[in-house]
Image (tube, rainbow, N blue to C red; front, side, top):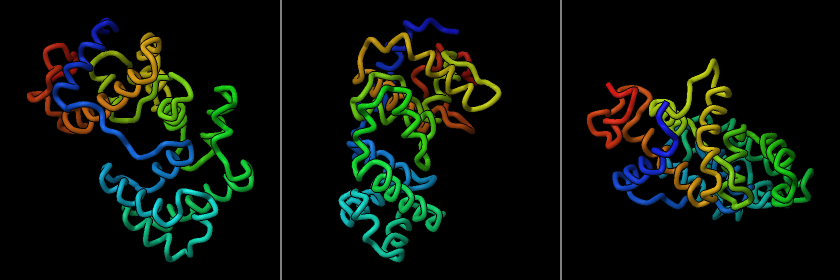
Length: 224
């Protein structure tokens, strides 16, 4: 496996390739959960469109979501891709859970010890361990490593993480690869999340990776 010290320099190369990290709309824990459930198998732009429509109609508040009719929610969900019926059910479930179990304010979760906060966040639709880590990182709650599937694939192919028997094992390996860099702080970890994600989306694709166009190809053990 390559030395971990190489990763910061490789991220610098990726930033020269893709530009600085993009700023996504979510701010709070609930915002992130709604962002994840606003779309299904769509790009950020389409997810953003559905999220903004939801925000305009509900202010991203549980009471606002529950005040909409099912038809209104279906119309918003249609902006975010397929399985709109299922995603409407999830939005209602999210709103009811925040209302009934957290008094309408999910932000109190972020003041809990890390293990309890993760457990509470993972109870929501679409939020597994990767989603909980991302929420803790991007809300500024904790400087913790986080990855999504594209970024994790990038780390594996670059040789920093090992592909395990299942996604959970692979994800754990990816987090272990980033853990030595936690001391660099939340901003660095957020930047790593974004750059590795975009690398996986645009060049280090799941099928037919564009190795010839990759700025890291010379040091990549998986290059074709």
